[in-house]
Figure 1 (cartoon, rainbow, N blue to C red):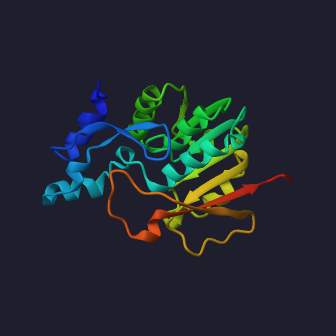
Figure 2 (cartoon, one colour; figure 1 turned 135 degrees about the vertical axis):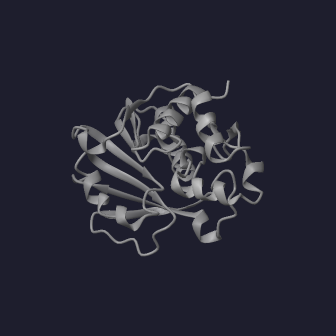
Amino acid sequence: MTPLHLQQALSGLIGEARLVISELPGCDLKLWLIDAENMDRAFSPDETRRILDEPPYWSFCWASGLAMARYLAVHPEWVRDKRVLDFGAGSGIAGIAAARAGAREVVACDLDPLALDACRANAALNGVTLGYSEDFFAEADRFDLILVADVLYDRANLPLLDAFLGRGRQALVADSRVRDFSHPLYRQLGVLDALTLPDLAEPHEFRRVSLYHASREPL
């Protein structure tokens, strides 16, 4: 059954938009996402204004989140038996992937209550249990790993790279936006190909997702 609260919120922004269960390519997860047909048309001026004021980013699976989910499926040792926090969770894709890969505990953290509702709906859809938090800085320093997918699109968030290691022993970051990424504590693990769903026809450069890792302790 479509999550009514989320559907109502989406309809308030884009009148004809619908949430549909979408299978994710390259992994065995699925999410409630905005239907692709509604992204392939011209938006009215009012719709455009509403979308810009309150972007329903929780109704998309962004490329970095998909890349993170695929990576954890292949490398479950990153999260197995660990306490994990998914920062800026959005749809919850990274946290759900961590739970499916055997994490002991996963907390989805997002400032937007609608995003947390989306995480709840998507966790139920995938048969996993998550915890939820609206305030990263209220969390105790108790996590083994902080997952960060598609957060650095706003360069104002770059200082958070230090903050992540204040709540977790390690951080794993997926990003396709920052081309001059440079931080003394983070090293690049590799580059993965992914795309945003529904497909926004983003430039090829935004479909190349870099993974970075940092640890505050010697490995």
